[in-house]
Length: 409
Image (tube, rainbow, N blue to C red; front, side):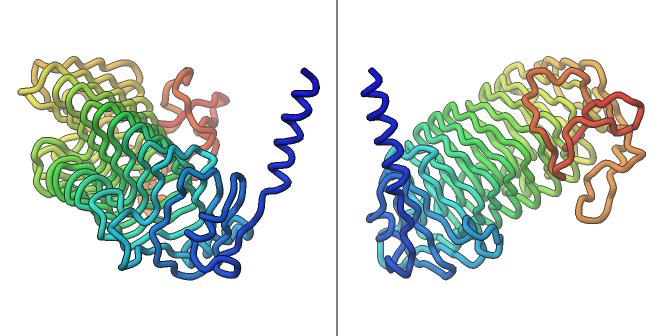
């Protein structure tokens, strides 16, 4: 037994010691040639420049990264650019299609300007769950499913410290789309200025029993022509913690405002600041077909024409609200008798007194009624340690000697 253990440890150490750094373009002219030559544990290190390639990890547990990972200089992300070439068939710029795991890492690039593929034009994860971090995904356009990132067939990537900017999709998911039991995890992600022209989900679109989890995220200036400028779920569940959702717009509501949950979908929203979102028919949250939503420690304020809207023709829906600031209170919820509303303790209806200016206009001013008014018992909320400003998530904001979480992001 000891001999087997020692052999295993030796082999593992040997593999670590043998890991190499493959330099592009100094040693390998293209990123793909570096990937093709790489072995498990290797790093393909890419110098600043623009690379016109379609990249496929081919199932390898390797890191492909810019010099950001060696310098920590965020300028390396903008200076190391991946664009599609004009020769190969239309694919996503970066593809994970061979059961890649979190040990397959893409880090430190700008992925932009792919309008050739039908889905996931920036990055496609198909039956793969890689790590995508420290990326800018900009101005990609898909016909179907995810202008920026497409997760399909049990794809559950980790997406961290990523900006998705100005991506569009004709159908379903301007920035991100996921389907068929895909469960991406997003942390510290900004989705700004993305658009789904038809069928909604300007920020993220989910269908077919997917369950994305989002922490410390920003949705802003995302749009859709029809339904759900930010989030759309069909037969899927979504968990969102610490999110700013502001200034998003639906141009022509075909049922569904900023967030739309359809067909027995479930949404759990904790510490959300949702404000200044608009639509022609339903501007806020929309439930349909037996879907349910739970809001905890959140602020829904100045969303037009309604903060919460429920289709009178739908199957029974469920709304649960606790320790939230909802403009208009329970009386402001637009609904029919087909909804069950659980209006629990700690809810208020007041001007949240946002800071209103500077780099963080939706932070709470010192006079805000939302300070220290969240739920005292945060058991099971799985809150991150810090908020979007990297302050402690739970602190004594009103200086009364008791640390209680604030409402909002």
